[in-house]
Image 1 (cartoon, one colour):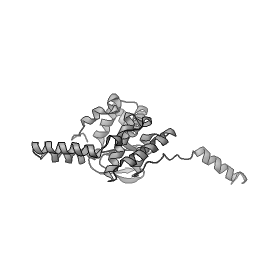
Image 2 (cartoon, one colour; image 1 turned 60 degrees about the vertical axis):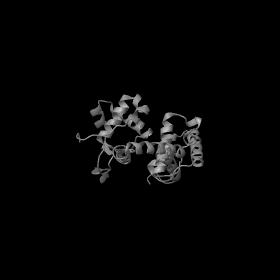
Image 3 (cartoon, one colour; image 1 turned 30 degrees about the horizontal axis):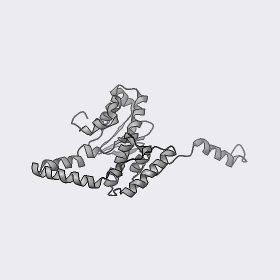
Length: 238
């Protein structure tokens, strides 16, 4: 497990995570621990395949290794999820952490692009760069990425960028009209107390192509109260 290497890209320097050393330490730890290939694992009373880019771990195990408080580890894991670095599924013993875009940065699409560029001549590189810059400007109008004032902060910008990239991966690129409508929805949902980041993460995790409000589960107390009303005329021994 302690052999081999991983890639860390300079793009991380522009991320707010760089301002929180312990959070950055946790993120790098998860990259180092993530599977580089699919592996079977017994979890939730069944054998599952832990995919490449995922790891099953626990806050106490992480806290012992990183010398951080277990409760703080839990909060920082949640923060990484909200920032869009990972998805987390938990049970009573441990958590299944899946790093988003692991393949892209650790050898998939990003690596293929790098290798392809390394095979062309210097003249071809310059030509391709100029063409790509021109195409990039045509593909990404500034208005497509301009967030309304209600959403205009660095974390929302990153979440919106992930949404655009996700739609592109699904071959459902966002037009200016679609972007305007979806940003309007995010503003509306945020005004109702919902997080734009959580809404975007929810759609990506569930494979949706639209943005929908966070589903609120009915409180247990309300369910219990309803059951009491239904059974108030029945004998106490039932």
